[in-house]
Image 1: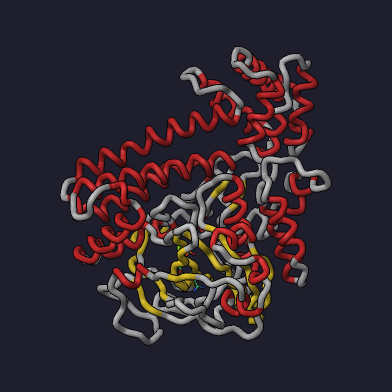
Image 2: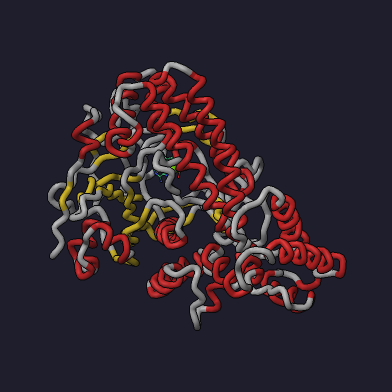
Length: 525
Ligand code: AMP
Ligand code: MG
C-alpha cells in the first residue's frame, strides 16, 4: 500500500469506555463506547469504491484495488493506528423511548487525520456483533448495503449534507433475513459498507446519558462534541455555550430537511438514534425517493400503519426529534426557556429555507410573500394526476413565455404516469397554474434560457430511483458489479443531462410499482 493513513482516536482518548472487554450483549453504563473487534469474514470481494471519498481521505486510487485495502474494508485486517469500537447510544423509535440501542453492527475503526488536517471517522457497517447487538446478528445484507453505499454518494453529489461511503464489499458469507417479517426467512449475500463522517454522534448518544442521569458523563460528551465539532459555540462549561450549540444543531437540521424536500428524499426511519449531531443524513435504511408526488408517501412498510415518517411530515418530525435532544441537554443549561426559544426557531428557519428553496426550484430571483399561493397551487397541480416530481421540474424548466398552452403541456408530458388522467379539467388547471407561474417569473431579470439553466442547477435529473437501485442490487447479486459502478457514475452529475444515459432518468416502470425493494421496503437489512 502506498497510502499511509494517520489515525488519532480522540473519542477513545477523551471519553470513558466500557471496562468489560469481552464481546457479549449487555447494558453498558458509565461509558460512551465499547472496544470491539470486527468479525473476520470468509471470502471478501470488493463491489465498488467511491473515488471521491477515497480522495477525501487521501487514499491513493491504486490502493483502493489492493488486497490489503479489501481485507481492511471487510473487517479482516486492521491498519496501524486503528482501534475499533462501538458507540453507546439510545433513541426514540417511532415516538417511544427505546432505551439503549448503540452500534449493534457498526464498528468504528478510528479517525483518519488527512494531510489537510481534516478528520474523518471510518466505520464498518455489518462487521459483526457488538455489545449493542441486542437480539440481532451484527450483519448486513447486500441489498441494504448497496442502497446505503450508493445513496450516501448520490446525496453528496446532489449537495445534500450526508455521511459518506468509501466502499462496498461482499463478505462471502450468507446472512438470513425475513424481508417483510412475514415468516419467509431467506439466505442473502452478506456485505459491509465503510462509512465516513467527521463523527457518527447522534441525538441518541446524549439522550441515553440523560435518561440514566449520568450527568457528569453527559457533560463530558457534550464538551467533547462542542470542543471538537462546534468550537464556535463558545468555551465549554458555560450554559450559554450549550444553548449556542443547540441553536447550531437546530439550524443544521433545518437545512438538511429543506434539502431532503428539495430532492424528494424520504428517510423512512427518522428515529432520534438516526439523527446526526452534525445535521448529516445518516443511516440509510428503508429510504425512498418520491416518484409520483405524494406528501403522504413512505417507503417503509414497518411504518405503514401510522406513516409517521412520510415525506410531508419530515420537518415536523425533525422538530420533535430536536425537542428530545433539547430535553437531553437541559441539565447542562438548567433553564428551559432559551432551549424552547431555539427550538421554536426551527419552524421559522425551516419555513424561510423552504420558501427560498421553492423559489429556486421555480427559477425565481427571490421569494416574495405572495409566492405562497403559487406554491400551494403547485402542490395541487402535482397531485391532480400521478406526476413524477423529478421530471416535472425538469420539464417546467423548458416551458417558455412564447409557447402555446399545448406546447407548454407537452414539456411536462414525460412526468405523467397515466395519460388517461389528463382530462380537460386537469389540463385546464395545469395550464392555469402555468400561466400564473410565467406571469410571476416574467419581471425577473432572466431570459427563458437563463431561468431554465438556474432551475436545472437545483432540480436534479438523476436521483437514485428506487427501482434503479433494485436493478443494481439484482445485477450485483449475480456478480455484475459494473452496474453499480455505472449507476454511481450517473449519480455523480445529477443535474447534467448525460447522453446515452436517458434510461437512468426514466420514471418508475409499471413492474416496479408494487415490487418489494422498489416501492416497499422494511427495516429488515
Ligand atoms: P436502525 O433502525 O437500522 O437505525 O437500527 C436501530 C438499532 O438496531 C441500532 O442500534 C442498530 O445498531 C441496531 N441494529 C439494526 N440491525 C442490526 C443487526 N443486524 N445486528 C445488530 N444490531 C442491529
Ligand atoms: Mg440507526
